[in-house]
Amino acid sequence: MFDFVLVFASSLLAATIAPFYSEVVLAAALSRQPDAALLLWLLASTGNTLGSVINWWLGKYLSHYRDRRWFPLKPAQLARAQAWFGRFGVWSLLLAWAPVGGDALTVIAGIMRVRLLPFVVLVFAGKATRYLVVIWFTERLLL
Image (cartoon, rainbow, N blue to C red; front, side, top):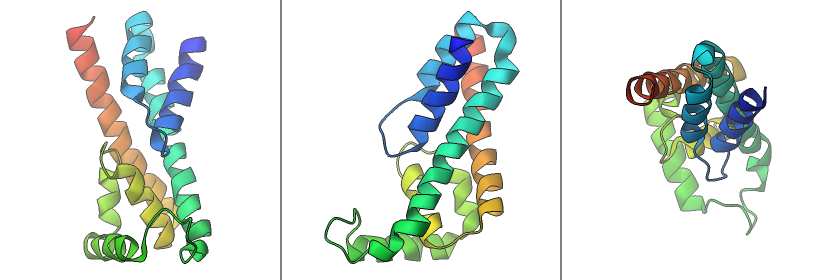
C-alpha cells in the first residue's frame, strides 16, 4: 500500500515546480510489485496530471499579479512564452511531460486560459505515455 501512495505523491510533486523525479520512485515500486504495473502506471499518470492541474490553476488565477515584483516571470519572459504557446497551441501540452519546460508549459496554459478538459486530456496523454516508457524500460532492465 505504501508503494502506491508513494508513487502517486511523488508523481504529483514532480509535476509542480518542486524538483523531484517520480520515475525513480515508479521504477523502485515496480521492482517490488511487478504484478501491479497497471495500477502503478495509472497512479503515476493521474498524480502527475493532477500536479499539472495545480500549475494550470496557479497560472490562471495568479496571472493578474504579473505586474508585481515577486511574480516569477518578467514581462519579456511571459510575452515570449505566450507567443510560443500561441504559435503551437494546445497541442504543445502533449510535451508537458518534458523535464525542461514541461511544468512552465502547464503554467502558461493557465495564463492563456486553456479550458480544463482539453488541458487534462492532452497532459494526461503525454504523461501516461512517458510512464508507459518508464515501465517498459524498468521491466526490461530490472525484472
